Length: 204
Figure 1 (spheres, helix red, strand yellow):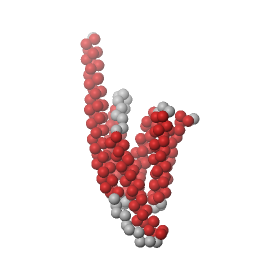
Figure 2: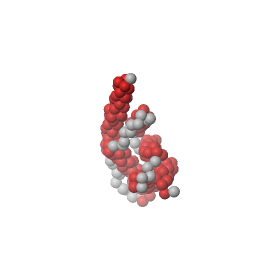
Figure 3: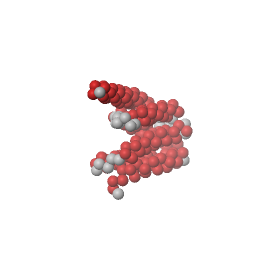
Figure 4: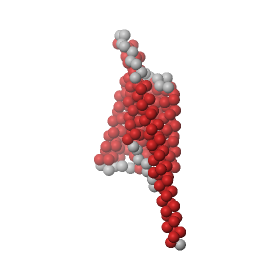
């Protein structure tokens, strides 16, 4: 049973997505931050358990990054609908993820794997930081002021700078992944196929 814990934690992350979205739409931003933090903790925990006890499965390889992407896109979409962030941010993210999925589908079955790199992980972390900052800023400038009935200073939208940095990192990671897909993956596979054909023709 213990070997299924990483996959169970991944499924829990999917189940937490609608809860986070619901809390954000109800302007319960602190609640959304807490649940998002729990989601992030389960992400770290399932990865640690899977690597520590060698519980890595094909399900986990597929669904773990998908849970991250689903959480990120869902939250960015929520913030966009609430007009907290501009629409172009999520458009860039969706385009990037579409190209990544297309590239992975292209390499599927070709015995080639382009593993995640530090720049891809950095982009994800920056987006999560920016999302948390967005939620906290909305809470500070809205519900908190109303709750304590005190003229608190308005927080500037400093999270915008983090989004810009995350977008730049996302574009950089996209370029690097495309390079890895085609130079390391497709071209390498083509060279191997040509080599095999040459050997076959020689032996005939």
